Image (cartoon, rainbow, N blue to C red; front, side, top):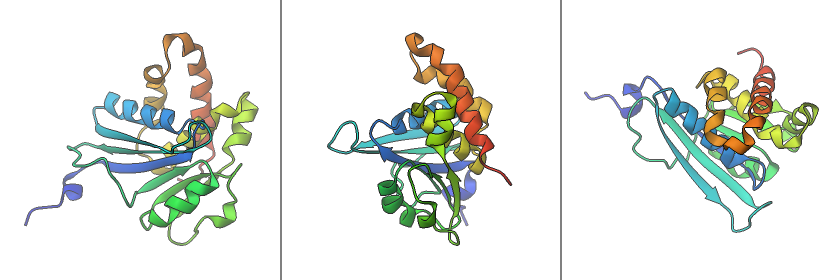
Length: 191
């Protein structure tokens, strides 16, 4: 009997990253995809924008695998990175049982996170980012926490891909973003 696609894979992981436009959701989705490619993995990145621009809804799906990926569409993800309350409301019910949810509890009430069915991680990303010097770093803090919670890719691999998402004019931001990723990873303990 033939094994299923997922049984053939050594690595398969998918994540939906969601928040308001302007929170850097697409940036960390792109970063994750580039890091996977740098690691020699296959990946898909599928962005979804609301009708509004800044402040509207935004989410993306990233799939990483060591095998060909049949579809970038994921209805029931293995993990979520949620930056705001509407994203928790929309995507938490779709998360697979035992899935990882990394929530920005600077904005999201941790009481709404399911405790029994999934593995939630509360990360006060905005507060951590502000201590680093800018609240715009919250997305990197969240991605760092997700990396640690899932073990999907090494932190250093993602830090090494930062130059793929920042232009040469903005390369000065790379060291700060490396710190944001590391601070996020520090928030996840017991893994």
